[in-house]
Image (cartoon, rainbow, N blue to C red):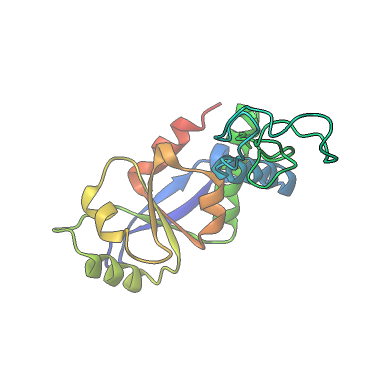
Length: 207
């Protein structure tokens, strides 16, 4: 079982914590991670592209001119797809791009993503991330002290001051344990965990 230093927001070591092997010692497999990331990105697609069919176009249903005797091509109403302003024949319809991935695979991928960060020594554990007030400068100063670049900060409970103070900093994201996902873990260079969040993560991924 790996042991990591627990630091405070000034970068000083305050204690150590054991990282459970059941979550942080899983051999990563690219195929599993790729499948789950693909699922997450597909779910983000809007799928709202649509066109107006013949029945959706506004216009009269009256036949434009008689069938025979004019020497012209046979025409129906003005909403014909063959006429300008008419309906579209083969256009996109609203659809869902969502993919289904088994719960066990999603859980395994999350463990693999966390394990890969530990293996790369990109996990920082903090005893707390308390702010006296909502101030972006304070968060920037703390991240600079800890030498954290493009961090994903994971908290176990709501931390309004931290969430509001960091939302305008490029490359910084704060997530609660219930929102932890593979895509964000892999996207961000550093993973910052509160010490209390480790047990919560272990409980969420227990299986």
